[in-house]
Amino acid sequence: MADTVIRNATIIDGTGGPRFTGDVAIEDGHISEVGSSSSRSAIEVDATGLVLAPGFVDVHTHDDGALLQHPDMEFKISQGCTSVVVGNCGFSAIPAVVGKKTLDLSGVDANWTDLEGYRHDVEKVGPAVNAMMLVGHNTIRSLEMGNERRAPRDGELERMREHIGLAMEQGACGFSTGLIYRPGRWSDTEEVLELAKAVAPFDGIYATHMRNENDYLLEAVDEALDIGSKAGVAVQISHHKAAGKRNWGKVKESLAKVDAAIAEGARVTLDVYPYTAGSGPMIQYFDIKNPNPELAQAIQLASCPAFREYEGRMLVDIAAELQITAPEAVRHILTAPDGKQTICIQHTMDEGDILSNLRHDRVMIGSDGIPDLGGRPHPRLYGTFPRVLGRYVREQGILDLESAIRRMTSLSCDVHGLTDRGRIAEGKWADLVLFDPELVVDVASYEDPKRESLGIQNVWVNGQLAFNEGSHTQTGSGKVLRYREH
Ligand code: ZN
Ligand code: CU
Image 1 (spheres, rainbow, N blue to C red):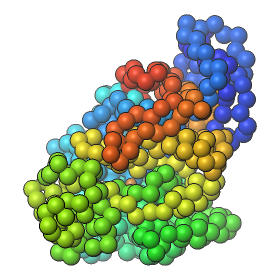
Image 2 (cartoon, rainbow, N blue to C red; image 1 turned 45 degrees about the vertical axis):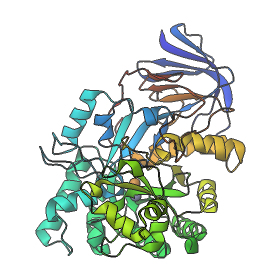
Image 3 (cartoon, rainbow, N blue to C red; image 1 turned 30 degrees about the vertical axis):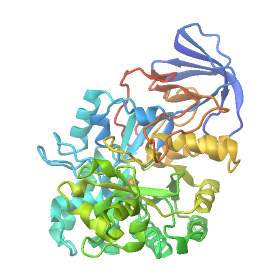
Image 4 (spheres, rainbow, N blue to C red; image 1 turned 90 degrees about the vertical axis):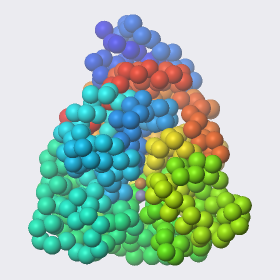
């Protein structure tokens, strides 16, 4: 007897193939039947008029610490996400030193040193969603070299390679860089290549927040593709974008480079979040001695522990009120006690570039949300997936629903080694989302970002109901997955 039968759903199976109507039965965490189910079950769900899809995979997250701090993961499960890839942009919760803060974006107190230890602690709290780990360059470089602005010595490079090897043995899917951030930016191509080679024996991926996403975007794409081809690994370009007005439109040229590389046999994918603003640690974007005035104009404060009253406001308005220049306001904030913990939002991108990304069939969806719930986080944390489905699929017709779902599910699972997930087929894990295609849309805004989206009805994780018509069931059935493990 099935545990749950979802009847009469419009099934979009994640492969990109056309929708069909049918039933899906769940038994022991897996999909046991697809089509017309004669199974009886204690739980019957009438899905007439609703779409049933594989649970969405957020391929670009900084949820390493959130899985422990906010195990309900309400900002993700309410979007229909059932798995998240953590450790992006070169910042991961592993490796770590017991008793010290992790070197990811959340900085939680580590009770582990490696992925096995992290997995144990995360699974103990029972997160609502599954997770897959990338091991971060900034993290391992900080551990071995601090913030040193030089090339690694042989012993240091070897120890960094060992960290990557251990993470891969323990089930990480690859190695990530954040080459605009300290200390990753002090590395040259050679260093990154030597480290990327350490994932090749596992056929892992090289995920990169590239060295430049504005004036030198195309050069940065060349570097990423070059590292992939020399190391013999698949390349995953994070949050593909062109920042700064004079660079708008370059995303097309960048995608053309990717297409050319793929035509030559390279394995390349990308991800995008559907917003024209980015977000990250403010200290990483500015030289405190000489803050970039152009960027300062585009800054909004997300979380600002030093001045909570600034959260949600544009920096230029704060500067006007204080009767100082915008660069002076940057210094005022960053040099205050706790100023270094400020998370900012940068309004620097073009809507047309988002559309180019969404139209490309190697571009997956990733939120890049920063789960600092204290302030006013970038709305992508709560809204990314429903925004693609509502605004770009239903309202604007930029891509069709089947294609959007493929790039939230099967493609994402294939790239990141989430075996037996991302498709609705017998025997696959029952990670599922049921939503109303006429209603689904984000409501989180820059002004009011912590709002759950509309139209997501039910979410199952490993066969357990995690989200039921707006309520979080606290079943905590998520796991820290292992790369390509059945
Ligand atoms: Zn990044
Ligand atoms: Cu990121």
